[in-house]
Image (cartoon, rainbow, N blue to C red; front, side):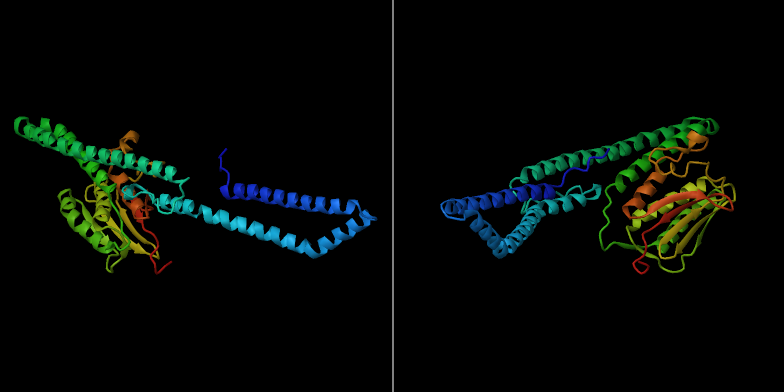
Length: 348
């Protein structure tokens, strides 16, 4: 069962209302007591008391009701006004994330009673930022340090061992080097910050990827085609990050395409910009569509080659851009990987 917690506003309202009601009862009791003392020595005291009570209610009853209502209103306004600094801190905390780890909760206008809590939260954020930076730096340093011995080892295999015997070792070294490169990219992605005025053209990015990957595709006896990029498709985004996302998908598609296969990069915009990368391979195994973009999940666990970190990097880049990455099998065969961006302002 989820504990939703108690509302401070309601709690304070109840307590202050009880206090106000108690004060009202005490004042009324004192007034009645004073009247009673005056009437005790008078003839027809009961009749006079009844008349005074009726007169009191007729003349001052509405005043008491209005006073009580006004008191409740003042209490509500006072409580809400008192909690405004806390609500402001809550709104600031909601904006904190990996992309702005250097920001802290403001202490301006924070009541003294809440200030220690805000200070402790900021100190915790300091420790988290330091650990976060150390982790990213460590990943980048390890990746850089590993690449040099890998390059030396590869050169020795190529120089000292028969090419046929060295081929499987070189293949493994290339796979390891690719994984290290992906680790570097994953570390860089986590430092991306998308500013309000950042914009880029998806058509230009797709054309650039196709141009860059054409040479690799031709060398493998395959080809890459671009469809739907005749007009600019402007979206809020970072050009290099989105270039990396599309390139990762094209590299993945080429890796799973048969000889003489064609990889299609397709742009669509029906109020929501979309980039599709389609191959003509064997398609996706059943049930893995949601797993493909998980970090370190590898397809070879289900009988294929490894996917490594490449697709998880794509998913993270799209998440930072407010979009999503998805995959499915194409009706005509092969797999389709889709990058879906937030609706364009004109459509919304």
